[in-house]
Length: 232
Image (cartoon, rainbow, N blue to C red; front, top):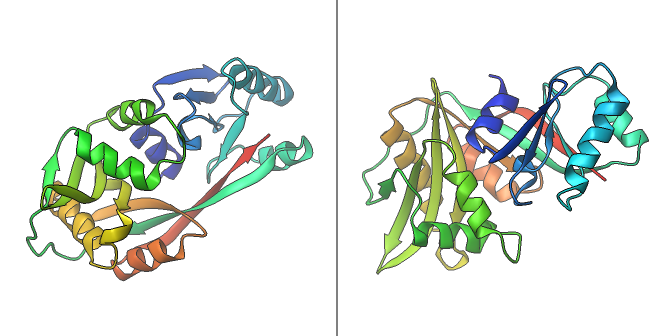
């Protein structure tokens, strides 16, 4: 699988600029994934390309960031380190050839995010004082399914799934703290896979998040690739 492209397409920045084989991405500063360079090509002048990226993010009051995935240009990571870029957010890509069957629990699935879905996701995963509107715009940038486990009028757990050919990209898995250890994330994951009707799936999780990794491994996911960011 071309994980760089899959992740790029499943979490699309609403502003994208091509520069000498690289994609400069911007989405209001919400998530590095949508506000970083996707450096898959080989610029004719590496130094000039880095400087162009720095100017792009400087114009938008953001620190320049590069997504260093499996397909990143060879030698770029070392050059960015030499220029003072810090390695941050080591991330795992995990894949599963098939998922356990859904047991039929009541899960709401829609093809657009609704207010309670967004509020629950942002309450858990929002790392910014503001920015929900930017995040919602990114979420809705491609066709996807949005799942929620609801109880007594409250949305307790959510997830997002993006159909991508013969695989399913799983994103925005979040459970409110008071509802954890009830298997709700597992329920959301299986319901999305059942709804999609595909066996193969992938997801991304930060390397330090051991609890999430344990859950995903118990559902048949294994580490298939790694990436990180370089930020200055």
